[in-house]
Length: 92
Image 1 (spheres, rainbow, N blue to C red):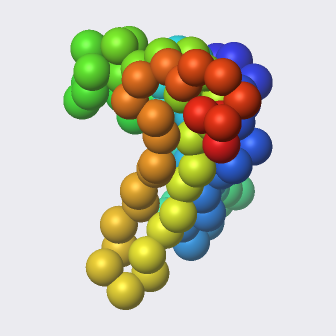
Image 2 (image 1 turned 30 degrees about the horizontal axis):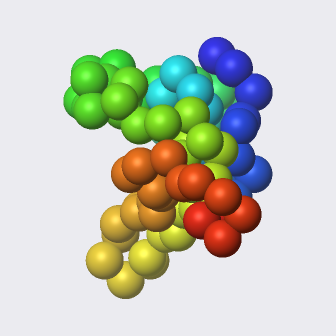
């Protein structure tokens, strides 16, 4: 796993944190289902779902991604540019 490329991409969903890197969307969760000590689960969410789509997102768009969680609908969404911006006026 690589360190986050976009601090704005971090989203907290209850005890889980999700974020974007150049090699995928990651989640880090604390497993509290067991009776014994809690474990940590790190997972690349793009590997089994949208890997091909994600690999075509420009690197600068990944760096500028912004995430939000809607606790009413239980949906996480990220906003990102689908094309590389040109010039200063095209930057986030």
